[in-house]
Image 1 (tube, rainbow, N blue to C red):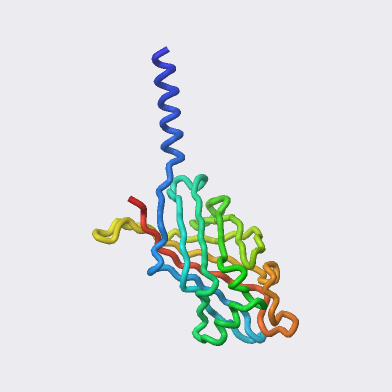
Image 2 (image 1 turned 90 degrees about the horizontal axis):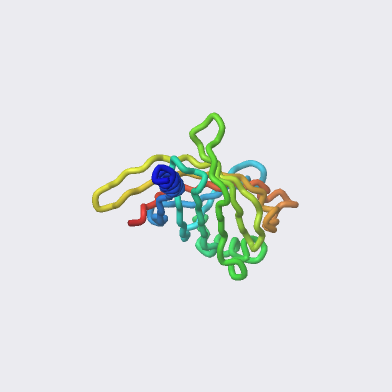
Amino acid sequence: MKKITFILFTLLFASQVNFAQDAYKLDNLHTSVRFKVQHLGVALFTGGFDQFEGALQYTPENLKNASLTFKVKVNSVNTGNKRRDAHLQKADFFDAEKYPEMTFKSSYFKQAKGSKDILVDGMLTIRGVTKAATFKVKDLGARDIPNFGFRRGFTATTKIKRSDFGVNYGLKQNLLGDEVTIEVFTEFIKSK
C-alpha cells in the first residue's frame, strides 16, 4: 500500500510540475506594435501604436499550457502625422471612441512543424468584431540581468483582412489594401 501511495504521489507531483508556467508582464518601454498595408496599389505604408499591455504565462518546454493576453489602446495610433492619426481614430477606421481597445487572447500555443517558430492561435478583436487569428512567434531567448530582472523576448507576425473587422475605408477606390500585416516586437519581464 505504501508503494502505491508513493507512486500516486509521484505522478501527482510530476503532473503539477509539468503544468507549471512562468508568469511575465510586458515591458512597454521595449515593445512595439506595428502594421503595414498597401497604399494606392504601389507602395507599403506603415504605422503603429504606442500604448499597450500584456500578460504571458510561458515555459518553453510546456507550450500546451501557455497563455497570452494583449491589449492595444486604439487612440495611441501613430503614423508620424497627427492629422492622419486623428482620421484613423474616426468611425470610418478604428472608431476609437466606441471601441477604445483592440485585444488578442490566446487559445493555444504549438510548435510549428519543421521550424523553431511557435504558432499562437487565439481570438483577435478589432472594432468589436472578434475573429480567429494565428501569430507566428519567434522566441528570441531569455536572460537574467542584474537590476533588470529575468527577461524574455519575442517577435510575432500575422496577416488579417481589415474588411473582416469592418475597417473598409478606401477599399473600393483601392486607396488602401485589404490585407494588413501586424508585427509585434516584445520584451517580457518575469514576475517575482
